[in-house]
Length: 348
Image 1 (cartoon, rainbow, N blue to C red):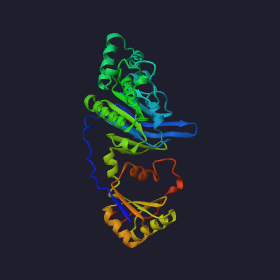
Image 2 (cartoon, rainbow, N blue to C red):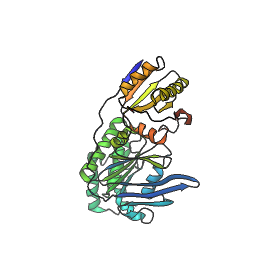
Image 3 (cartoon, rainbow, N blue to C red):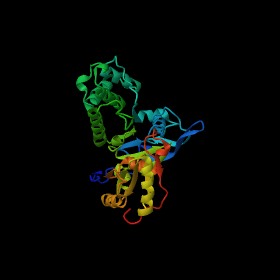
Image 4 (cartoon, one colour):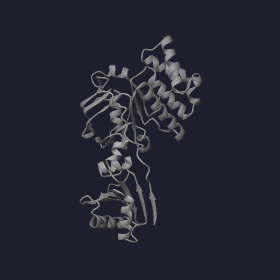
């Protein structure tokens, strides 16, 4: 039997955002429906100044709908969303002056130079002349592309093009930056550079940054997260806070088959009063001092366990705990079947 144990300590929660009550982005029971289908259901939360806030959810969770509402491309069917105190539905023009937007789809004109792309964007916000030239110089310096100002956009790498997109979003000095899946199409190095720049923007200028993502590792970079599922807010807090709510370790027992996994989960419930979930041929549960619990299980049920993984809770585990199913929507509904039993007593 093979066993893997991950014991890396979690980082303590940050206190850097406890500066005041004012929040640049406020959602109050926000709802949106497409006919009979409710894409957003009664969402309420705030995004603070000087934080990177992530909207994490699988495809179809409501991230894109919420992003479009906040960027004034769509009017909600219920509730309210405000940006810097302006209602996104009733005062969209005022909202647009407060936000910079980077969409998932490419918005650069590849036949224009970097500076020409920024000049066009600045004109849309009424910037002209010396002021616009100064802004172009400043934002290109901030994203590290000042030496590429006169290069055509089509000659840049994917990571550099994404930085030009960021520069476009910042050309009018917004206090809020909205990014929709910003690392789409980027290689790991370019993705790392992007997040380092977002952190610099947060730390040095206290810009509120809202990012949509379906990538767990990307969500770990956020200061706080709203996890969405089928239009519902299922979890809210820092990655550390959310994972701390799991408690104990996450234990995954690998068996020979889905049938063997079902049998093992039933025996765990009977012998250890442990609430487990079946994922294909694996059995997942949460338990304090998981490495000790594993020893007891292997001794109690010899030959049933092929391999074991013991790890600290992840955001994937938070999602499973809150929704009862895996993060990815292409997993069959029957692939995760919670065992109905009371929680484990001592040690759980």
